[in-house]
Structures are given as structure tokens and as C-alpha cells.
Amino acid sequence: MKIDVFKMERMQSTWENVVDYNLSESGVRPLDLNWLLAPDELASLAELELGYTQTNGTVPLRREISRRYPGASLEQVLVTAGSSEANFLLAWSLVEPGDEVLFELPNYMQMAGLLRAFGADVKPFRLRESLGWQPDLDEMSRLVTPKTKLIVLTNPNNPTGAVLSDEAMRGIVGLAAKAGAWILADEVYQGAELSGVRTPSFWGRYERVLAVGGLSKAYGLPGLRIGWVVGPEEAVKRTWPYHDYTTISPSALSDRLAALALSPGKRERLLERTRRILEANLPVLEGWLRAHGDLFSFHPPKAGAIVFARYGLDVPSVELAERLVREQSVLVVPGDHFETEGFLRFGFGSDRAYLLQALARIDETLKKAGGTW
Image (cartoon, rainbow, N blue to C red; front, side, top):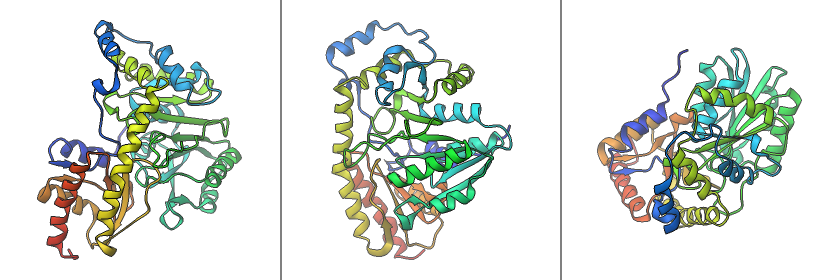
């Protein structure tokens, strides 16, 4: 099996720990254990035995995850090494060569690469900038056929920060039901809404929904590498054996910390921290973008620490991003990495001062360009 180079992850892993300013991240700045845990909780970790854990996730962790999905039982939850492993396991267990899959664009391109590698016929459908990054349901309906096996989307969306309208969600469910297709909804940004109003899940809207979540984006805990799948019990049981061939089980330390992070009270405190960061930093980035007149245009994000901005320079996005790395030691994500050229994705989940300093660096390259390239 051959697999495409994952362009975004390759660029990030090459530069994110080298540059002075990393604006390529889509989550808020990570927190430390002293912030997360009370002194007695922190002390109890010293007694934790670092052996194998229950391979589908311990009962305390799966219980906390299931509470986020009304009606879900513990057997309908599978804990994974981040949401990326959840997506991988679902692609591996669901897709056979020749299966027809609808894939949302722009999007984080992990699943597109996996689907092609597993032999799927990948049919993209686009969120339309002119519709506020909502899908054209008429376009989608023309793509769905009786052979459609799966519809893959991210909600809230990466890279746009858009949230699907109720009309769009109902329309997508209707199309999936007509074809008998599965919906794989990556909902890892749920909880990072600017309004504080939780994005509705696809869970509970249709019997063939596989909801993916994790602690990397909204919770500021990417280093735990904890994600999950919630779905029909039969589908979760079918996916679990594939997990045995990959990471086998979550880290014992990560499993314990994740259960604590999702516990009542602590979870709300984590999400409130995220909202404070977003509310403080989004006006900084929006003001900077608007100060450049018609050079940038964008729809303010509804969720996530990301803004997807169209730019008015006659230069490919990868070339522009690479120039910012070379000249200013600043990393942003080119729109090409979401198969949407002419855009840059800016992350604003860092410290406010760090964000301002990074944007000032970008200004230096923009001044050199003089509005042209």
C-alpha cells in the first residue's frame, strides 16, 4: 500500500520546533500539570503503575466520554491515541477498494490520504466561502449515489472555524440515509466555540454516525494523545480489533489524566480557559488582518483558534509560507495544504504578546513585497 506525503504534517514537523514563532497550531497553548491538577491529584500520579491499561480505555475514562454523547453506553466508546488514530482505525476498518466516499473540503487532509491509500473513490464536496463556509447541498446531492459508503467531515471545521448550520446537518443526514452511508464526523474542535455554545454533534441524529473527538484542540492537552470514537456498539466492536494492531492501549498516564480532565467541574474549567484565550486573541488577529485593507479577507471563525484568510498577493500559498519561514522564522499553514489555494491559516491560540510579535514579523515580509510579488 502506498500513501501520499501528508504535506501539512511534514511541513509542521520540519519547522514547528525550529522557528521563532509558530502560528501553524490550531489549538490553544498547552497547559501544564500544575494548572490541571490539584496537589493531591498530582501526588497520586506518583503511585500510578505504568503498565498496560484496558485496551479500549479504562471504565472511568469511557464513562466521562460517554457523558458527552446522550444515550451512549460504555461499549459504544473506543479510546485511541489521539483523534488521528481514531480516524485511521475507522478508515481502515470501513473502507474497501472501490468504495465511494464523499470528503469535505477544505479540511484536514489526513482522511483524504488514508481513503485514497485504502483504495476508495474519493469524491470531494466543498464548503463555499460565498455561503459562509457552508456546503452546497444541491452539489452534494449530485455526488451521492447508491454506492456511497461514507461521508467524511469536520465540524467545527478545520481550517475555516465554521460550524455547520442545522439545515446543513439535516441535509447531510438525509443524503446519508438515502444511500445507507455512514457519517464520520470529526468533532475534535467541539468545545472551542467563541460563543460558548457547544456545537451540536451528529451523534443521535442518525443510526450510522461515527463521532470522533479528543483532547488536543479545545482542551489544550495535545501531549496526552487521547482521542475517541463513539458509535453504534457493533461498529465500535468491529473497529476495536484494528486498534490491537496499532497502539494496543492508551498510555496509563494519559488515560488517568484524561479521565481527570473530563471530570465534572474540571472539564468546564478547561473549556473556560480556552474561551478566554480565544476571546482575548481573536480581536488581535482580526484587527491586524483588517489593517491591511483589501490584502486579506476572511469570515470570522465560530470555533477553534484558527482564521482562514484569503490573501491578495499573486503567489502560491506554499511559496508565501516558505518565505515567511526563511525571512521571519514564522510558520503559518498554506491553503494548498487544505487543497484550497490563495489562503493562509493563522493560529491564534498562543500568548497575546507572542501573537503580536509574530504578526509584526509577517509585516516585514509584506512590506518588502510592497503589495506585489
